[in-house]
Amino acid sequence: MMADYLLAAIVLAVIAFSAAWLSGVTGEVFAGPFRAVDGDSLEANGKRFRLEGIDAPEFRQVCRRNGGEEWACGREAARHLSGLASGSRTSCRSHGEDRYGRLLVRCRIGETDINAAMVEAGLAVAFGDYEVQEAAARAGSRGMWAGDFIEPRDWRRIHGGMDEPLIAPDISRWMGRIADRVAAWIEVLRQREDR
Image (cartoon, rainbow, N blue to C red; front, top):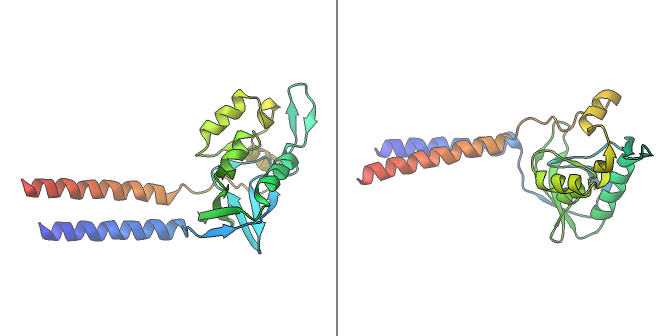
């Protein structure tokens, strides 16, 4: 029975190592100020960052208000992000890289989650994590939700550009679920052995 525990521990260690290695998770924290490249990308000290879990309109993208008036939603998203991330108190924690080599980050200024703030302002759509903020923006007709717009990923497909949000599934979360199941299996084995 001890060999089973040892094997399970080895499998768990391999899974944890693989999850960290495959996802490129560093957990490294970067301090501002940052320069907004567009509504979901930042730059600082020669490094490129992409806000994880959101997709903002491209810089050249135009949206329509309910009255049909066009407005530069892409530029507005970049301006809004610049206002949030340009301070020296801004910090971003990396969670891996996208397929273009940019660090995927979640950024904060004090207690404010910048990624969430972009979605809540209606200047980005949720991509996996910020559905509550997106629902609030929709309900309040804020930003892009005050009229019609083309989803940023569709706009990129039509007009050319990086297909950023089609990032490979988050392997670390998937591997984490497997690790949790293996740990539960080990606990069941321990309980059976104790009986």
